[in-house]
Length: 225
Image (cartoon, helix red, strand yellow):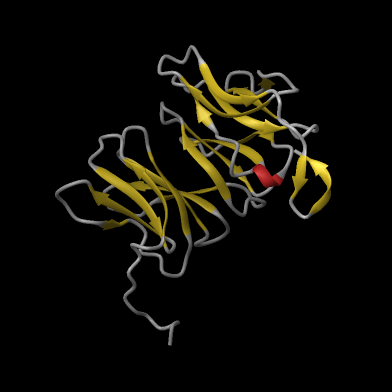
């Protein structure tokens, strides 16, 4: 009986949320559908109506006119970009045959690119206009794929994140759009996380510990931090 069509209250199944750039609407993912909800007056919009698919990780475009999300509908895992009003069919962009899921997706401030981390902890950067896909870097472990903290600089020329290195410490790394290369900024003996750019793009803030000690690891009797 539970497989038959029926009405479902999805308000208790929200998996992600984001406020629009104008602050007038909020974006939610719940039970595999994408919704926008007004802050005050207006109607709730279901942008996907995809009972047979899982639509995930919605994000607003910087101008608030579009919404992007990942979906397993159709042929393979894809990125969909649609009008925030829910009018017309969304544009479907293939993101590679080996991508099965996405974490930490973020749209660059100038609207030209979207970055995310896949199930193999690879950082992908998509050029929205052309669909060109670039693998910027790969994290040291797949266990951290949801915690890299991808963040674009205000001028959209740099992507910062916290990457795990062979000694299991995380270092703040920046990837250059111009050169296509990544460079660590923090010391290899400090554990750093949560990068954040200042509004002007001159400074990069982050959290760090220089005295992180060893601890018992998950399902592992050896020592690890």
